[in-house]
Length: 87
Image: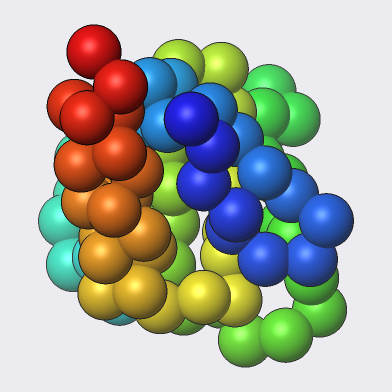
């Protein structure tokens, strides 16, 4: 299944490692270091010019999403429920 992150960006739900509130990038030294390393390696995708509300970490990239982490979490739970019905 897939999760819509905003704009034209859709990712596979099984690739999601974490969904963070955008405030988290400044709250922890480790998180800040992780984000900066991905920025330098060009692995960060800013989905739109809107305010960044969440950070979605996948196996391959880090996405800055204009959709809140609460909404993305809700979407991911709906996807996981759908996946459990199809198995």
